[in-house]
Image (tube, rainbow, N blue to C red; front, side, top):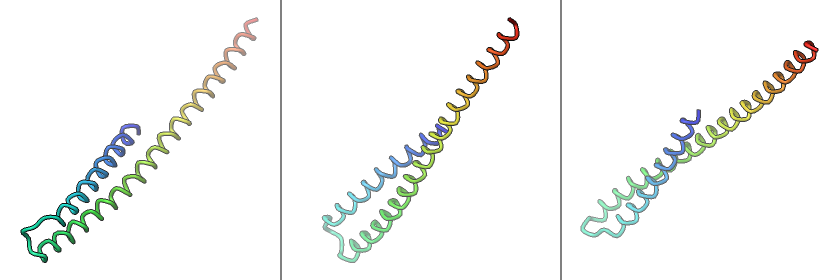
Length: 102
């Protein structure tokens, strides 16, 4: 479970950088000369679409990462509870064994 959460964090980081890179490309495309207005407009339109797709993937990745982190926290909490219960049971059994031997 921890490994999946680490992977989700990494994917979110990669998508964040991808969105930033594509946005920078779009800004630079507006400054480029040597292309016709139509060509530049088409390129901007396609790049804007790709940026929106990356943003959508980033949003899904962020929510997935949060769900996985919640799951990891829940597993840890349940494990801690089991350790406490097992420790208490062990103490109770040891006490009973000790009392029965006296």
